[in-house]
Length: 544
Image (cartoon, rainbow, N blue to C red; front, side):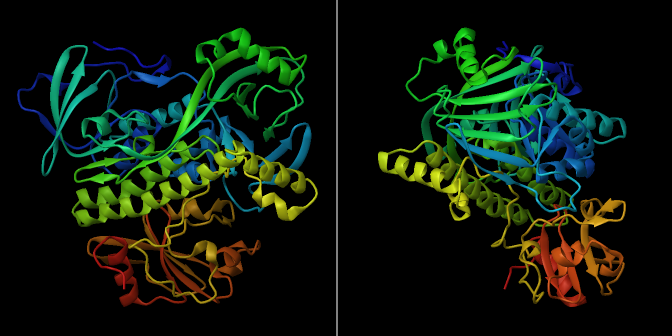
């Protein structure tokens, strides 16, 4: 009845029979999430914290084995922090900001992803995906204990979906047999091989890259010469692959990716003696234990739309990219961050359903940006012609001595948050001389505020951020309340508040969305314009 698709690292939600299974009439749930991976659990955390009842259905009973996604970006950690699980992730993860690029046996150059100070979270942490998921499920259990309306059902496999005008009907298989549930809103977070996408006859458009990569997680013994940095080799001299990537993970585990080509015998390559042959050629006389291994190919694809009426898709179910740049799980978390507050407002009757069309607008833009960067990285790492290879090698040679060539080196443009410049929810930028990094559509940059940081003070409300000017304590428009956060550059010895939010302006008033993206800004508070900005940010008024 159930064929497990993978082995579990942690059994965290074993099957329990639910009351829904004994009823003749299907129970209607406000939100049902298909898939209990990181994006499905994040969706449950986002909605459950708002008081929105959410049911997560997963065909397994816990978290799968294998490091898989290991690089979690600053923006992803900031989102997790709002959900209440960022700090344990930071405590477990290996912090890194520095990356080094090699060509054969020469170091070409190095880069720092977060050279500036004044941020709570680092550019990246490395952490095996099972830990990431475990921390989120721990937080989910805490919220359940506090009364959050979240249900998580293991060994509940969705076999059929019937989409109707205002809901969906799901047939769910369990060890005790099938039952039906209904969903006002259905969210597909069931991964790259999404069963929901297949059931609805939906597909991806994009490219499949004809190459194979071998992952080996190893635990080295004794002294190690590799620091907690990202090291990438083009044409490594050890000859174990056309390219090689090295990352440190928690528990003294190291992740090594070898590019091994398209026409390989996967079964043969996965034999331990052959994996060790590659590792030994790279590491030399180093003792290690094998922890986990896998072979993957990848695609740069997305769905044409992420919203299909009452059905929405997020994460790998909606889009896929190469692993170079760590854009998979990180972009999925941004999907949830974008969708959660909008769906919450729609369910509560505070915004029209059309607000969810902006999820399509903004996250399709995010997916296209990720696919573009991922495709460029892949084309640079794996040249498709001799001319392309000559160009790539010339860039690598030049970048060793000349700074102008270094931006052209592409070993994976690493994940950064998306700026929604063309979002229909933005108001026109009215802050003359304001910094580009905090323009409408941009995610808020963090700033240290004494013993705290700006992003933690923003939380996940609509916020009127008033800097060196006055604004009311709160304003309510159409059922949406925006609270005030007043700050002064006189209280900021670092100067970062001015640098990141004022620029050349003397004062500023920002409207910040619940996902901490800027919706509007100007030099002073104007009630009429602020009310207009709130309506526009909630899909009630079209941009001019």
